[in-house]
Length: 293
Image 1 (tube, helix red, strand yellow):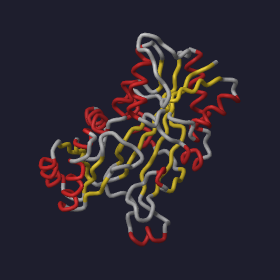
Image 2: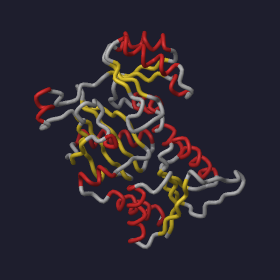
Image 3: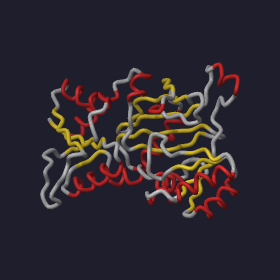
Image 4: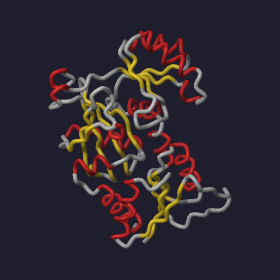
């Protein structure tokens, strides 16, 4: 048995997949998106099944399109990556399916964004429609700060920075000063890892002091959490909406439990460490079952 895996480089997650596959006598053909090129009339990937693990959204998205055109099965699919890789498209899908998600506005100029923020009310959050790891996300505390951030985005070269994705700031649980200082209860969100039709692991990501974001790659503390029936229901609905097979689903607790984002290429180092679950092994097992069919 053999499958291909597209990635930027062999990070911890990709190494765990390769090592587990080797232990199960499964070969992995590594395709680095930094060196990959192709004649669009000639397929140069031998395996039918391809696992997409590109950190670069654009490279991964278009390589997936190319491979699917040649008839390969790619996990996750082009359609799934198109939705999950774009926060605006994800929000539209969630709202259409009546899945709770934070209140979100969209604007396309600085002036219209400022008017939207007046209606949304401060504090609010601005996020790039395409991006990950909490980069270029800003907490807009007031109009003066919003103007400064928006003026900066106006002169950026990336056209997607001029799509102003504005979200209501959600007060997370345990946002209490004394609890924050003691570090016994710290504001958090929830990451659920979904494979096939099963939740394989979940964790709370607790904010760091001095940073309102709770991104594990930025140092947020990861702690295993129990999956409630409400979490499970939301995760399954979210996975169905994007037609995803291997997903990292982010939930946030406000006045109600909501889906924040859906990640089609999800890191799982912190999740594996905090839960003790062999996520790489579960991914390989899923791919083996796909290859048997």
